[in-house]
Amino acid sequence: MRNRLIFLITITALLALAGCRNSSIGGGFDEGEIHYKIIYNNPGGTIPMELMPNTMVVKFKDNKTIMEITAPIGNSGIYNIIDLADEKILTYISFLSIKYYYQGVTGETPPGIDPMSDLKFIRTGQTSNINGFNCKHAIAELPGLDRKFDIWFTSDINLDDPNNSTPYRDIDGVLMSFFYKMGDMIVEFEATGAYQKEITDKDFVKSDKFLRISRKDMDNIISKMMCL
Image (cartoon, rainbow, N blue to C red; front, side):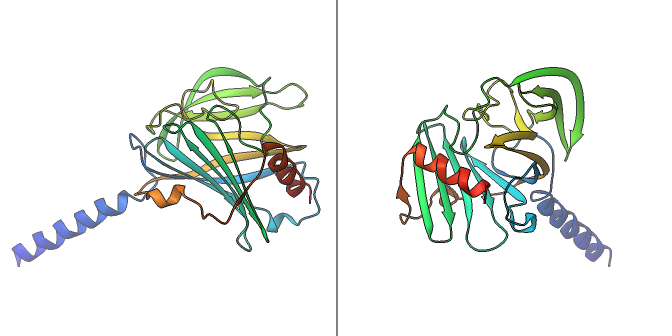
């Protein structure tokens, strides 16, 4: 009876540890995904908000990341792949019958996102635990906007140069709370959880059914989508 009890306790502990690998935890992993909720400010389009994407998932492995913003209905979304080793970024867009992609180089901001070259940061020294991660705080200011934004970032996730192809190159950590300017709209992202899990190489590959277009054309398409 005693041996059976010890066996059951051991199995329960092992299952609990296995479950923790997919839980929102803090510290030191370099493969997994981060989930964000999306908040739209001053939306100018006619699409009902419930049909707009409300979550973003960022998957990362071997210093490759893919940012997935998908709509609640249909097979629609925007996907940004950043590959530091190959020094390239890929932006895919799928909307109804539209399937296009753009290929650029690392360091440039993906299409549809304002480079926000005048973005300034004030590091406050404030810290907080967000979703199990030790995070640092900064205040972001962008000329022309009548508000400031709280930026939170962490060094607990092991990614080299995580903000290479974003307006946040000066932030030395993985972003947990930030914003983008997309056309006339301000879009905020707040992390709801980060999960250590296996990411396959297939996660960074899209089908060959996408037609390659220029950055200008991709910018125009995304801008129009945001204003629908």
